[in-house]
Length: 267
Ligand code: ATP
Image (cartoon, rainbow, N blue to C red; front, side, top):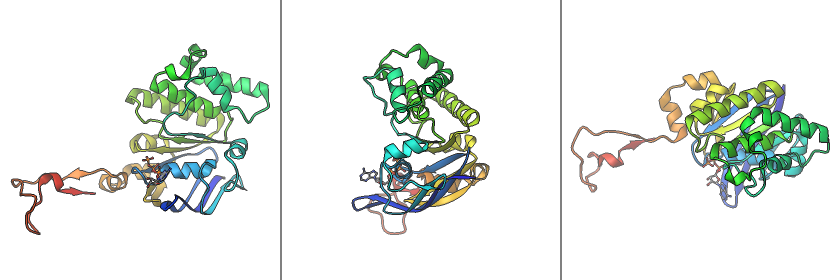
């Protein structure tokens, strides 16, 4: 069953058109990867869902209810939590206080206490640092805390913006294991924005690739994983250099002659 549906969403910032008719869906309990190069519109898509950016056109439905036009506060209350890029935790608050902030829309004290236990069971090293200020944690622990804070809202859909950014491969692996546990044990659907396509597609069931504010490719994760590397590279903005067998020509060479190797690139 479809939990989230974006239908031809347009959004932007002043004259910048960041999204040009993005349509995508996330089924209940699914893990969906949203991929693409820098500036493709991934973060803007998440911000539109969580109400931080208001779409200029199209519609966003969550569990049959329109989200576009609602406030971030209302959207959290409906069961959508957003873990933004860059681990925006409250650096001066303790770990416990950060987690409580994630539950600010909830009145059920017992449920909040239970979820705090669940988060500490997922991240036992956070329990050990419960009284420590968030800003003193390592980058990996701050990311876990940001995810834990998102979970404290008891979301049915968790939006994760670049959770692996800046983390060592071992930490990334354990982070994705925890995400899989959250998905399985709580049935939380995950929409994960990633530049690390390989990791994201290994854990996702379905994937979308954005390019210049549009969905360029969509399909089951296994299919995207098996796609030709060249095609994926072009969407992820990887620059592959052509090594010229000839000596470098001068920069003002005539049309048709070889350009300096440093300028020879393909998308
Ligand atoms: P990145 O991984 O670099 O964040 P992204 O795929 O998440 O890339 P967005 O951050 O959604 O892309 O940006 C989409 C477009 O909107 C880009 O052209 C970007 O420069 C522009 N943009 C994003 N935020 C703003 C803003 N606050 N003001 C103006 N333009 C913005």
